[in-house]
Image (cartoon, rainbow, N blue to C red; front, side, top):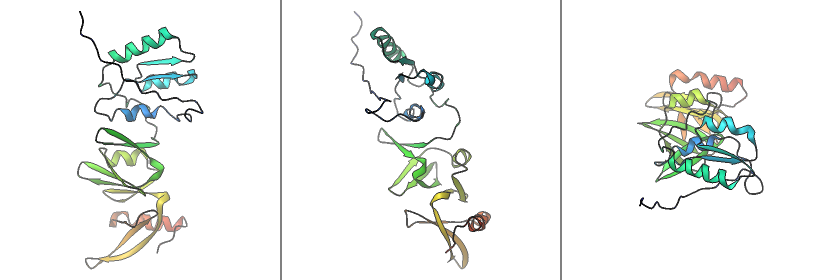
Length: 211
């Protein structure tokens, strides 16, 4: 007799109102890969237009509503048999709408629009929002490539959100004058390196004030 298996744990996310507002992309599947034990993903939707996108992120199955019981059982069987290490980041290289930070077995999704700055520290990048900080394991150079239109480099180890810049202030440090970026939502200031001082002029030309 074969060994009995435990119950299959299933998380259901509905993409139709009023249960849930429409999921904007299949990006959530990519972020699930951050978990230590990433789940197998099965899409169930009334819209066949997303089928190709689903398999781009290596979903194990794609069900169209109304769902027949036989097809549901087949999809669950595939989910049980699916290899857990399968890479989901084969998603198309469009800029993400969220960053993901793993903390104690949980994945926090951080809206990119809420990020004030990204600062490289050792092997991590600190993601700063008005509410708090997160740590992510991504390269700052890759983040700059992906979100170059939204962020500008203030220092070799820091990108600041263009929309969050409220001005610049010239200060003295160790007997030398330097510029600092003033950001909305936080009191912390970001130093501007000599190499990047041109951004002060660029923001001034765009109508941003320098204090």
